[in-house]
Length: 108
Length: 113
Image (cartoon, rainbow over all chains, first blue to last red; front, side, top):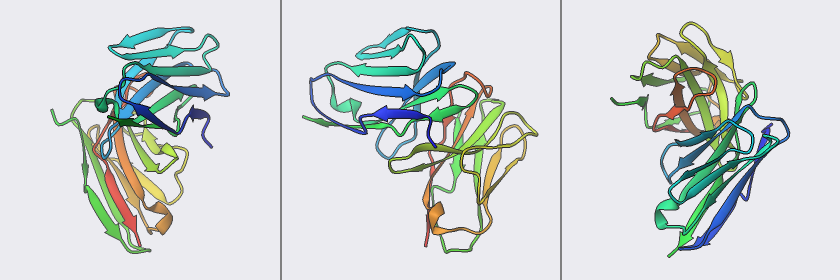
């Protein structure tokens, strides 16, 4: 079964609001990746985190890797309609395992 | 560069029929993967090929076979399709098997009736 759990499964956001999606593993990870899949599209790589406590930013997206390297989060500020889609985390220990994803919808 | 290409885009099969999904990449990547995506299940790895000439089972290999034809091409075969194999199939590639981002193809939507 899946080793990487993502919450929430769905996130309905008012345009302009912030939200966070979380990724948790029962196993210490060597690294974690985040992907975005637009409706009807394919997953596209966003970022990879490797170091304990690492924080990386891409414009309005902030990615964080936990100190114990067992969890990660993606925070989006000032949500826009272009943020619609499903965000997947993928944690690696000896293999890469994808979470079930957080599907984001935006109310204009 | 086309990146990762997959054929066909859509396919409908009857139970028991066989078919092969084709995947090719033009990025000179060593590693290639086949995933299936089902609602609420994320992406589950079926098979992967860490390098040309090698293939290994992933999380859900039953009912599938793969061939790494050469460095560019990695095909997935369903010998006797079952309704449980109705899914969207994605092929992906990466420079190497560990610690590298994966590039995904556009997917094949397969329905088995």
